[in-house]
Length: 217
Ligand code: DC
Image (cartoon, rainbow, N blue to C red; front, side, top):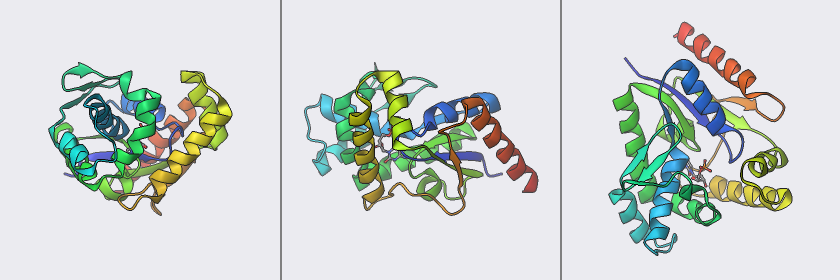
């Protein structure tokens, strides 16, 4: 039997983590944050004093690093890096790491292995429905305007809304224009705008889509 995979893709700040986590909890299945994996590699790259643009060295780190993910936590080589992977330094470097094809290949394999071991789950990222799990049970593409996304980020981490909106737009551009597995909306993905909806409303909507998909297969 093919495992149940719910792919949640979309740009930064569209609400992917919040929605994916709440959905996984409500369905009683696992949750994998693939962005945290790219961040974990980036954290280790910076910790070792390497350049995020050093393709060979970064690829080596990706192959070696031990990443252990909990619902709300990430350990990198045994060390709790939950907060450290969300710093501006990691934010600035992570899209270079994510553009590295050898890193993507390694993490893609780990993501597929995770689903096989867990028998399915909710997987959040940028290329989940397009590349990692093109046969996912349900593909959701979450969107929200850059301003809404920047405001959410400021509410969580502080900072200046305009500056953050600019940084978010730049990161989206890098994520969407890279050659390997760019962020893109798949034709078979359901687009959900989280801008003017509550978390509960979006989770309910996606749960009903999962049920409808399961019933019809
Ligand atoms: O979702 P996030 O902001 O934690 O993601 C961090 C970075 O990793 C972001 O620049 C996009 C990249 N990423 C990716 O390229 N592919 C994924 N499946 C997940 C994240």
